[in-house]
Image 1 (cartoon, one colour):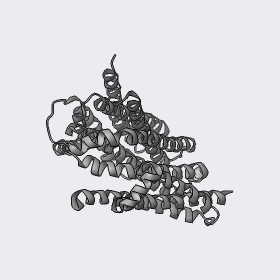
Image 2 (cartoon, rainbow over the protein chains, first blue to last red):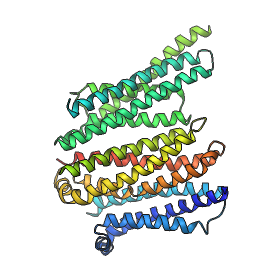
Image 3 (cartoon, rainbow over the protein chains, first blue to last red):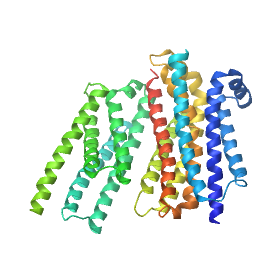
Image 4 (cartoon, helix red, strand yellow):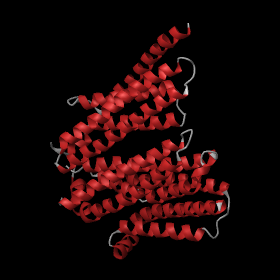
Length: 107
Length: 167
Length: 151
C-alpha cells in the first residue's frame, strides 16, 4: 500500500511538471505566434480559459496514466518533488522575464 | 456602524494582538532562558503567545485586504499606490518570512526577535502616521535603522537581566 | 461595476487570502517538532479548495469585466505596465497554483505520517509549499498594483 502511495504522488508530481511546462510554453508561444492564441480563443472563447482547461486536463490525464509507468520508490518521489519546485521557479522567472522583455525591449 | 469603522476596529485589534504578542514573546523568552533552558511550562506559555501573534497577523492581513476592496469600490484607487501602504506591506512580508525562518530554526533568536518586535511596532507606527509623506525607500531605511536600534536595546536588556542573575 | 461583479471580486480576494494563510500555516506546521498531521491535512485541503475557488471567481471577473472595462483604463493611464507586465504575469503564473496545491495535498494526505521521521521528504515538500506560497503572495501583491493602476 505504501508503494502505491509513492506511485500516486510521483505520477501526479510528474504530471504537475508537464502541466507547468505546458503553461509556460502556451503563454510564451501564444504571444509570439498569434494563430495559436487565436485558436485558443476560437475553441475556448478566451485564450486564458483555454490554457487553464488544457493544463488541468494534461495534469489529471498524465497523473492517472503515469501511475502505471512510474517507479515504486520513495527516493524517486522525493526527487520529483524537488524537480516540480525547480520547474515552478523557472516557470515563474521565464514568464516574468518574457513579459518584461516584451514591454521594455520588444515594443 | 459602517464598513470602514468595522474594518478599522478589526485592523486595530490585529495590530494590538501582534504588538502585545511580540512584546510578551520577548519578555517571556527572556524569563524562560534565564536558567539556561526552557522548561515545558515556559514552552507552553511561549507557544500560546506565538499563537496569539499569528492570530493577530491573520486579522491584520484579512482586514488589510478589506481596506483594499473598500478603496477599489469607492474610487480611492490612488491610495493603493501610497508608499506608506507598500512600506507597511513590506514590513508584514518581513514578519511572515521571519516567522517561517524562526520555525525552521534558520535564523538566530536575537535577530528573529528583533525583527519581529520592530516589524510589529513599525506596522503600528505606519498605521498611526497618516500624514507621513516619505518615499518607499525612506520608510524602509527607517525600518532598517529601527531593527538595528532594537537589536542594540535587546542585547543591553539581556546583558543586564541575564548578567545580574548569573553573577 | 455591477453588484454581482463586486461580490465576485470580493470573494476572489478573500478566498485568495485564505489560500495564502492556509499555505503559510502548512509551511509553519511542517517545521513543528511534533508535526500536527490533522491540521496539515486541513490546511492543505483548504489551500487547494481556496485556489480553485479564487480561480473561478477571479476568472469570471477577468473574462466578463476586466478585459472590456478595466484593461483599457489601465492601458491609457500613467502605468500601462500594470496590465502589460503585472496582469499578464499574474494571470498565467496563477495557473501553477491549483497544480502545486494538489501535489501538496496528495503528499500530506497519503504520506503525512512519515513526514516527522522522513526529513528529506519533509524538506522536499517544504520546497513545493514555499514556491506555492511565494506565487500566491505575488498574486495578491499584483492584484493591489493592478487595482491601484485603475485611476
